Length: 452
Image (cartoon, rainbow, N blue to C red; front, side):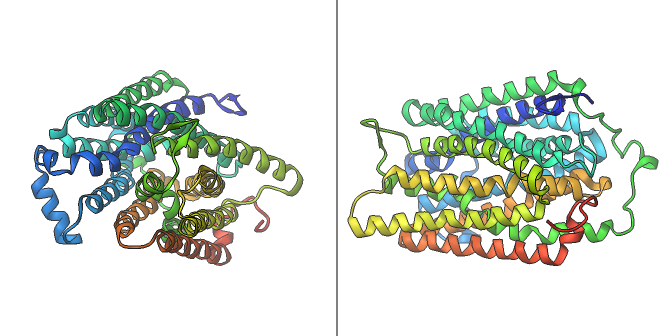
């Protein structure tokens, strides 16, 4: 394929466009979700209108015990935000065995658009979440797998491609809270969710328009069992190593995943949200995160290109270790900000927020997209879609933990709350460091003469 998009195949541009609009819709809705539940939907005047909610709440109570509306909102958010990273497992199997990647991605986009529009009605809240869970499962792992299919196993442009892919996502996250969040908080909740649905339809249109530039779709293996690839000798051990990395990735991502849950609730109460003389919606902090993230991701790509020219390209597991330790510093900033607030009695200035988001994004840029590149390259081709779905399991686990941790915000001083996150993320970073020492040769590209 012709390399005519920033040194990459043209099809990468269409995948970035489609994923960017999908993330616009997803993050626009997610920016509102915990606030919508805590400030509106779960209040006594409205919760009774949600179809099937009484049984749903009873099931949650069996597991978590009685919960306040704020804690219940955090748990539901965690279940949803975790679930969207569990369903890609099924989506990978559907693509590998039944429909193929292209049809599965398109089906996912249609389901997600339906889910966002259903969010505009209180009665269909649970149905909307169900459509979104299934839709993301069909869409996310499979479109990421298509990015990896452009590159040979020893092509180090793969990590660069996933960084560009992440830049597209970050661009969407800049605008989605500004548009969906502002519509939801300033006009009506349902306007914000409707805008997310429109974004998903644009993503679907972009994806379908670029089909001729995408990697050739293999026949579904259920229809061609004789052609189903087998695991080569040693690949089963590689699968086990990749699965063993998941707890470390999950812990390393806790601080980042908290941004859409307890962080916005805490920020609404503790940040001084006056900007240019006006009170801004707390969801704009997510746009701040994405805006700083865009700059940092671009600089990060340029830095590693410069580093590769002068010192050689570091392998993915090395960069993941660096990213995890940087992510641990993010909750440290929030801990110090909470200590400052307690000492002065004044709300936290937005410079603290800028510091947190900057450090967190540098860490994220060197962990998540690099992790995608690692799993895309190292995964045996016989289970490529499945292994990308397995990679997203670390975010399922992280969001489930975050959903539980968010409930502690009501019972724990903010200083202790964020210090706990810093400790947990550091544990994840240490685990990745140990994995690099133990499995580095297996995880490094075969062309690497030694660990970098």
